[in-house]
Image 1 (tube, rainbow, N blue to C red):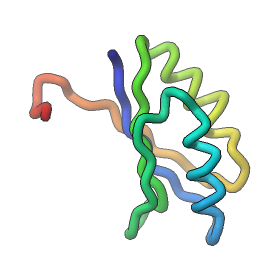
Image 2: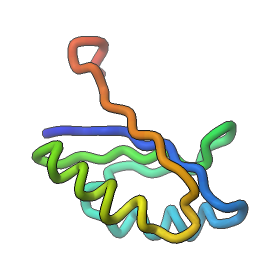
Image 3: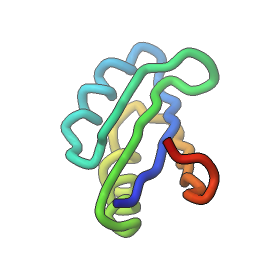
Length: 81
């Protein structure tokens, strides 16, 4: 199982709508609104990195009112709980 984390910036006031859209994507395993520089945190899991890339490119980044994304790929040999 492959996983990545995504940090999202979105238009002011659109967080709840975007979170609702994200929960409809099966690969989204966790989604939370956050305080600070980023507005939303997302955890994705899928069987391959190719599936994850497809979800990010063709589903998440096309949700209206998302301004930017930062994708974090974990280093499996460091940490892991």
